[in-house]
Length: 272
Image (cartoon, rainbow, N blue to C red; front, side):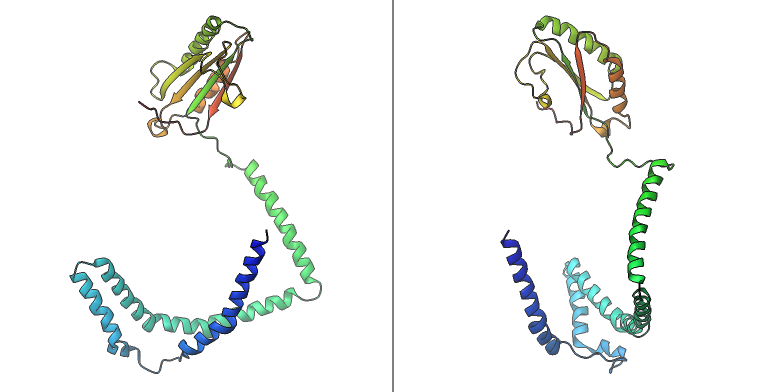
C-alpha cells in the first residue's frame, strides 16, 4: 500500500509547483489584457494575413481532394468569425451582468444559511428529506401502476431436465424413465416447434449435473437438454412460458427426482 500514498504525494507536490511557478510565468508571458470594446474594429479581422491563410488552405485542401482537412479549416474560419462578432459580446455581457447577479444571490443565500442555528437545522432537514424521498420512491415503485424490475430474468436459451433415480438402478430402467420424461417434454414443446433447435437426451454418460458437483458416468442419472434458437429467430415468442409448463408437467414422477434448470448464458454455436 505504500505506493498509493507516495504517488499521491508526489502528484500533488508536482501540481503545487506548477501552480505557483510555471502557471504565473506562462500567464505573464502569453496572456494579454483584454479590452472591451476592442481597440480595433471587428471588420479589421478580414485584413489579417493569418485569416486569409486559413481561407486559402481550406480552398486548397478541397481542390486537392482532402475534404476532411478542408472542412477543418472552414470550421476554424467560422469559429473565428463567430468569436469576433458574437461570442465576444456575449461573454462580456455575462461577466458584467449575469455573473455579478449570481454571485450576489449566492452570497445572500450563504449569509441566510449560516445565521445562528440554521446550519444544523438545514443539515438535519437535508438528511430527513433524503430518507423521505427514498421511502416515497420505493413506495411508488411497489404500489404504482408501473412495475420496475431491477434484475430482469430474460428468456433462457437452454433448459436442462435432470433425472436422478435411486443408486443401483440399472441403465435400462433409467433409460425407460428418461423416455417417459422425454414424452412429457414433447407434450409441452409440441412437434416441429419452430423455436426449438434440438432436444438431446443422455442416460448415464453425459447425464451428470456439473453445477451440482457430479462427475463421471452414473447409471441412475438421465438428462434432457432443450436448446432454443437465437432470440432474433423466435419472432417475439418467449421461452419462459415453456419453462413454467415443464415445471407443472414433470413434477409428478413417482420414484424419481426430477430437477429443471435454466441457463442464462448465450447458447453456444454448434460445431460441425
